[in-house]
Length: 429
Image 1 (cartoon, rainbow, N blue to C red):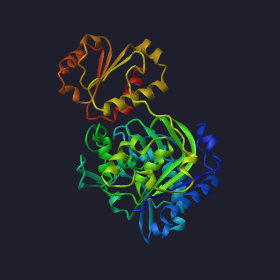
Image 2 (image 1 turned 180 degrees about the vertical axis):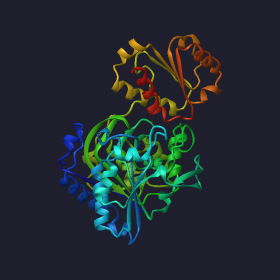
Image 3 (image 1 turned 180 degrees about the horizontal axis):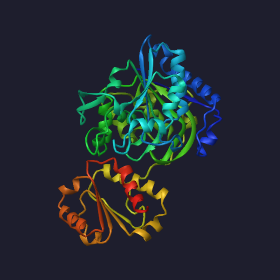
Image 4 (image 1 turned 90 degrees about the horizontal axis):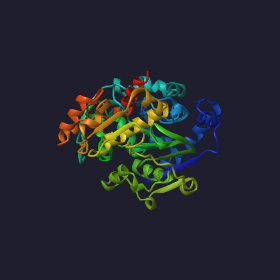
């Protein structure tokens, strides 16, 4: 596998200013410009489209759908890139069929593929480009496979199109991520397995072992090409409440690990700071060392930008919402923070506390808890592992004296990322 990674940069795109301003708008000239740059990064990374795709191949583009979000969230792949890539492959490759397929990551109760594809305007973009099929993975069959040499995730149910396609193109968004440091090609592979709710499969891969499991998933099937959508990236509290950052980049290569390593460097990280990249490299699944990656096209140092990094600590974020999370893994820790980030953005929290009373959120073991601290408060208990600690009796007493109690079962219940925000907001109705 080649460690060549190509980087291409736009001078500008007509629709970017409106897009960053909060309104996605498609311009034909942008699609043409993106198509030209996609051709360039593909040719520079693999030689030619015909080298990648043979006559009659079924080609699957696996974008970063993330969750139910519009293009203006910048959490999902730019619809313009979807349209341009599909059109390029339909017009200039020998592909028999071109598919676009994915599944969002927040669980079947808060994220389904069909509405997510429509909300992100990816479905519309795919068909404008000439896609033969848009695949809602959660409506497709899955196949249980063993993962040889995996460290943690030794068996998985995998969506059939990932195995049936002759060529798979991994198309992630360039963005930061509370749980994964960044979310690029490796993290995007989370979408190839079902998001069983509240625990199991994808939902069960967001604990402290998240990055090892991401590396394990790469063993199921490697992408034939990874292309990073870095036109308008996301920095800060990604993947949901970050801020857009215009980079105007496309980055591509056969080696997903190398693509992630170089892209994270462009984002201001050293590759070893991204655990999934480091683990996959240490297991021989790709190259991480920058001096062994052949960067072609634009000089990575000329576009390197130090992205704002996500903060993951939920404690003390919102006065009046007391988070006790003293003995737990990063799963509940980070996704409680993500949910509170969203809540803080959408609600006047001072007014909320004044009108609804104080809130307490508990996860894991909390040996410092005095159950009386929960008296009269709205109590939210996250995850299952609190039951395994000596402080569980105190948590049970707290549930008896609280004003209201809401539990989120699972380990780790990634759906809390959306559900806690939803439930807090419902109190404000």
